[in-house]
Length: 599
Image 1 (spheres, rainbow, N blue to C red):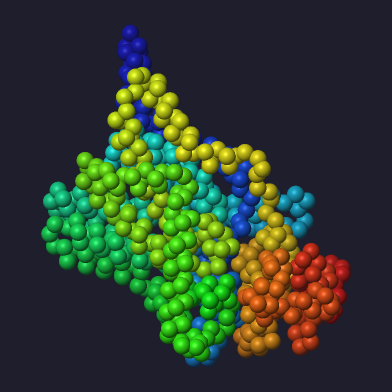
Image 2 (spheres, rainbow, N blue to C red; image 1 turned 120 degrees about the vertical axis):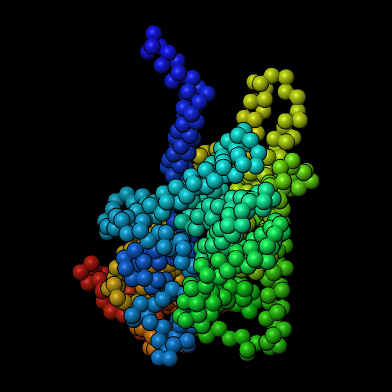
């Protein structure tokens, strides 16, 4: 009899008590793992994003004890570093410091890549599937995605009710765009979590200020808000602008000691972010390193990627100088803002919940806290549109939507929560005759919003990574060089990540800029031009575009099958333009592997 009573107590606990909560969370975790496994199996085929490879190779260098030394070298970085040092060296021989990437994401990758199995000789594999480092980074980002699901649930639960919280978490997990970012290797998922934590802190600050919480609590929350905002900036420099709406929100919500609390938040932002920015100034003379020049990238002054490939970018020689620069910045901002408003903003988050968020601005929530945070999100999005437009480079063209310059997507989980909240405000006003009909309508809503995710599993599905980012080929080419030698390539991030060799981007002009590096900084032992360049438009890219300095060089090698006179790299292992690629070396490095010609 006693055993039966205890059994009934356990059953009751699992149905209505704490046990039911554990069961729900266990099912949620199992469901998330199942979705991750399905997505990785059907859709993940390795990295194909330049920024992700750049961050990964930097994280590996940190993990192996080299510090913030990069193998992916930009000519602009070489120029800024050398010009800022008394000895005019860029430290290519000793180890070039990275002045392009913020530190947080590479630091997060460092311990992971330290324990990641090292890549074997990929060229010997008959059936290559995926590079180990790519897979481990995807797993890490999916753990961060799971953390984002938890944060979305907690915010929705605090603002609305359990039903809204669960539906928000489910739709977050079933948003295909977030999974694409998770397997891209970019820092976007981490930034989503950082922004969700920031809004959680601001929500607590608003509630504490309105309910007259103690001064100590408000001070700690203001400190936390400033510190987390600094972490966002140190993950992606453009998000440093986030401090503006954060300070405005703190000032508006603080009922007392407004100046003090706002100053504390700003002080925390400066204290956390300042040391790294000072390090950039010491290394390059610029607060954000090469990223300081981002507003001028992909303008009519420096089209495409010509700015980061410039040894000495010239500004003062421009006609009209100041007016030309202002005209370029204005044109870029206006054009970029128009494109964002027309194409990116309507598909924010990869689903239709953006429409519910907009309509929700006309509806007043009974809870003051989500109402104020909703306007914070709205104001932040309005600020980030021109910021994103001005900070965009050629990377947004090469990888539309899935790139680190997509700032709006970082705030889309908040848009999702508010969109689901408004849906239930409207949904609860409907008179459903039966519970079954209500649950059916909710199921249809979830399915319709999640259609992109379901369709991602349908054929045709992505194939194994293909050129120019095919790891076995890149590793094979890179291993012709010793570990302390330098290569030049149009895909230096891939050579640095998959080939584990120091590689500098192809300069604008080989007759002058190439020798600026080869003669005065470090000898270039190999040149690798991939199909990323050779598959582009012929005249507009090679002669009138960003590769105009190499147009005649490539044409002579392609048509006449010879290397222009005066160029020091004249040995090729497989002939010129094999498989659409150009590979030149300083000497015979493959005699034990057969083949090779001198040009």
